[in-house]
Length: 99
Image (cartoon, rainbow, N blue to C red; front, side, top):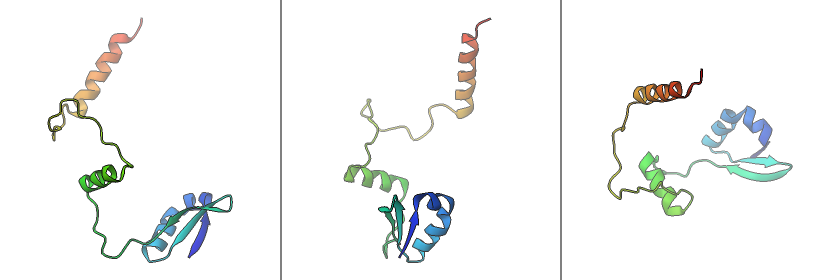
């Protein structure tokens, strides 16, 4: 088990993550108080996909999904392409420019 101050952790995060991944627990301290433990992953843990993570967060209460006012399924495809959105935004800004 190792202890590291928060400021040092910020500078060497990948090093401490590697330590935890290899089985070591890392205690993160601030003002000489332990504030977080970085622990190795549990044996047999399956990787979470985005949908599983969202479902888990909602189930455990640390994530509140966005409300869907229509009540129907959310669209899977973008409503507008990013380039079109940026063009529309630029045009809107140009309309507001004062001489």
